[in-house]
Length: 304
Image (tube, rainbow, N blue to C red; front, side, top):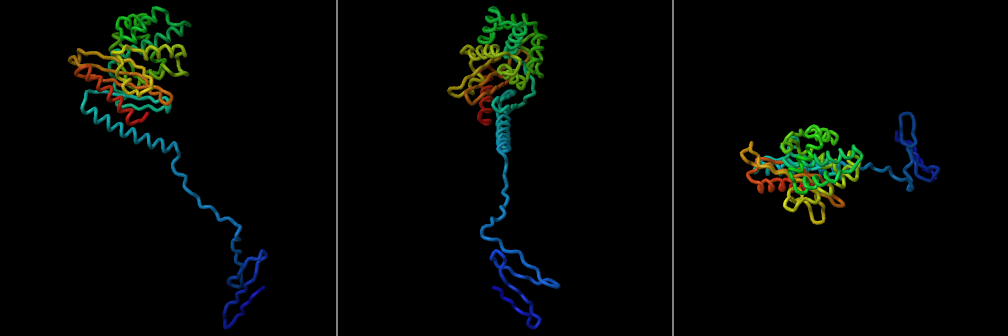
């Protein structure tokens, strides 16, 4: 059915009719003639979708959250550091691969935490010779780690080749900021290197074999009760802790105390290495308070 309007008094003719599919069509005037208007969309045609923004990826959101936590931890440690003697702290989270450090490149004397380096070198040396540690080495190592026995440490330090040998082992384990002293307790290191060492003791793809890693873990998880302070204070109920502590009243610092603690916290969902190094503490107990508080602040803010 077609309707037509004629030209009246100079008016415009508009013709209307039906398209082939039964929809209405119209003609619109153009100079010199008419052009068919496009048909209206039929009821069964879908509209073009409007693009929606995807927003940050899960990885980007995680990075943003991590940055917020690090900023808060930096502020908390800086505030605490203003009230106590000098300290540094580092955390390596093996589940995420992320490392955090506060004053991470500052060098400190190790005191007895150097005994972990001696232990690692003993295990590497035995591996290189294709054997397990001997019974005498085992007895010395147990005294050195569990009881922090200095005579046992000196004996192993000498048998292994002293500072140069320990330094060569450190290089194999990726320690780049540690200088071993001929007086082993005065070895200088950083918290960054200490968490690298702790990680090397458990790295299945690293230098140490499975039996060596198990041996080190067994010793560091069974220290004497009176030496079970520092890093273990961070552990929650049900978590496992390993530790080696160092303490020394330093004559060159007017009898002030070096207090250091290195170790790991683990369970099914947590695998974190922690190192805290400090000096200039007035007493041993006050130094222990410093290293434990610093370690606890990392857990509060990093939420591992």
